[in-house]
Length: 376
View (spheres, rainbow, N blue to C red):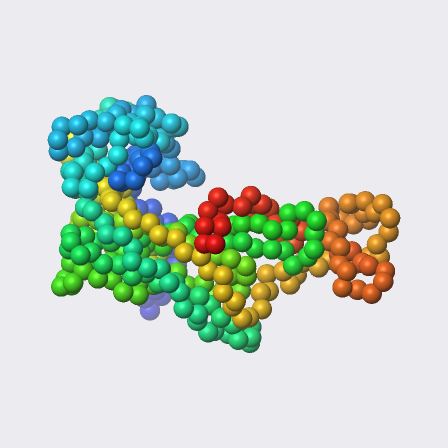
């Protein structure tokens, strides 16, 4: 019996011991990452080259400088890229521009893991992309804090009568005008911009007619001021070959999965760039070759619902006096005076901090975009 108790105590003691598990990863291993795209649009094409840092360091990446980077095509032409800043290399906008139907290959040399290596992409054909037929929107009803509200669903239609483009990708940049709900003298009207973050792709290879109808690009339903005055979205449509489509599909699946031990991670997604000196070295990222079509629309419709973005702005009110200074002693921090003439005589001022409530440039710019009046 005593022997049994000793064994039981030992098992309990062992089961209570927890050891830290550290995966068998190479701490000092550097992995090269390539991100770049050339298109048929005017302007510079950019290739970014950087290295992932050792896994236990706080930093994510270090850009690679002094690489020799060049692009060749199937006709024997060669174009050398120049470094504009560490890790960023661009084409000569006056001498290089992609041509649909041509096949392009990226080449570069870089120092990785203590040695100079040569890298090369798989030859990539630039497939022509059709124009975007139309971009349009529909109002969407939903409820925000118990109040009936209208959102905005933006769609895209396109088709390719030549039946050459079977794989599509889209991104967009959105800009909107907003105005502070206070009659401030300065910086009341501004414009804010954001670019898309989600991966939007479509495989049309199994469809008889290459037509896309009602592709959902963007849903705006948050109680913010995107739709309060005027809104614009510029959509870019890219052509892809089959290999690039599946690369983006893997990235999309990775981004949409909940992070777990056995989920797909970007380091396991193969790209199209390889080391010519060491076939065991893995290179991350992708060199894209794409034709591009773009289209912009403006939205100025009225959308019902309450915008609660500025509900917490009001800080205090005081009677107006002559020569009242911008900062008032006794108040913590710096405040702006906002004149409010909705009261009876005498008028009042509203004190609000120099943030989204009192200065629209804290969220955007007071310089109107050049294209803002194109819809007139």
